Amino acid sequence: MALIVQKFGGTSVANVGRIEAVADRLLACHERGDQLVVVVSAMSGETNRLIELAHSIQSTPDPREFDVLVSTGEQVTIALLCMALIKRGCAARSYTGAQVRILTDNAYNKARIQEIDGGALLSDLDAGRIVVVAGFQGMDVDGNITTLGRGGSDTTAVALAAALGADECQIFTDVDGVYTTDPRVVNGARRLDRITFEEMLEMASLGSKVLQIRAVEFAGKYNVPLRVLSSFEDGPGTLITREEPDQMEAPTIAGIAFNRDEAKLTIVGVPDTPGVAYQILGPIGEANVEVDVIVQNVGADGTTDFTFTVHRNEMAKAEAILQRIAAELGARQVISDDRICKVSLVGVGMRSHAGVAAKMFKALAESNINIQMITTSEIKISVVIAEKFIELAVRSLHSAFDLDEPVSGDARG
Ligand code: ASP
Ligand code: MG
Image (cartoon, rainbow, N blue to C red; front, side, top):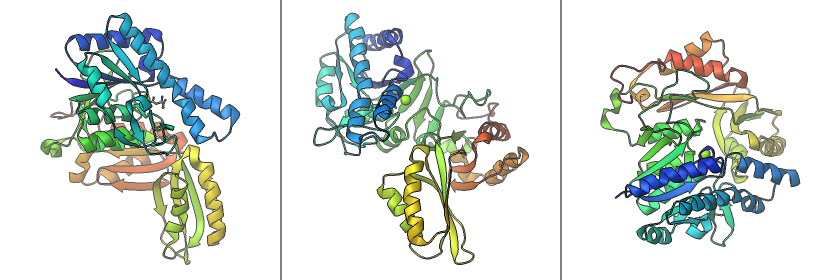
């Protein structure tokens, strides 16, 4: 008997018919003897609809009330799914995040899980029930409803799997696994049999929208075996695991991630003196704006330019802060650009292969794409380019790194 956490995303519970199909699938697993904790998202489009409603009243919605509102989507799905299970003669019980006691910090809209009390769920499981938990939500110590950020149901699932000591956490979605890149952009993209937590983290953080980044972090930290599967067809999916010793022989590149969600901000002509980066990014961090790529040029005339990227939604907020800092520092100008994107090569094999960056830049040069920013880590090389080149860049790189065809002896399949 295995304890499995299964998570179904918005498209898997998009309408009553699909909710009934999920119930059939759960029933089959339950009858095989598995203990099931099910995490669901809101029906697809529902969270967006709620966000629009909020914005139709307040351009910057009150954060506490925003979470009270957007958490309702998941509450609808847990109840409907339980009804579908009960109709099938299967004992089931739904829980909101607060009812489970998924304790988070109080950072509304992007709360972090601090503690989960699995007690009630475990006694339900022992009583033979299927437990259905609302994803994406929790509560702070004062009982306020919090949400975990877009895509947060994945994190709920992994955190529950870790807290309950589940055998596997299965994320059912509308794709049948993790691909070398988005198949909607590259026809020849192929499913990976497995990928390491580290690579998946880069793929997720860089914009492969299969899994929320925090969920992968959680899974890596607690070593929760994580599997991405299709809720529409049977198949092995992609297993996300620790790096194995033979990984050195794996292909250099696992995949190509890209992200259209960023905006670039430059503060021009800041003094080239100690403390300036802190003076710029300190207030940005205090405003809870996450910074991604950072580039500072070498100082020439005693001043330098400082450029970084943030989420597009936070560009206006960051720009306002930068204008204030620019005045304080006597900087010449603040420039912002939200028509950029980031494209990244990801692969643990990069550690042991030279020349990957050169090959990447050659492919981009041959497609006549200008690189605006470059950043690297041990297992990733990212470039910021104009958004209009995103598809061209991803396609060129996918073929330059031979990702279209299976490589012989490819351990990833
Ligand atoms: N419903 C939330 C969202 O759309 C959480 C999730 O789907 O994981 O972001
Ligand atoms: Mg999702």
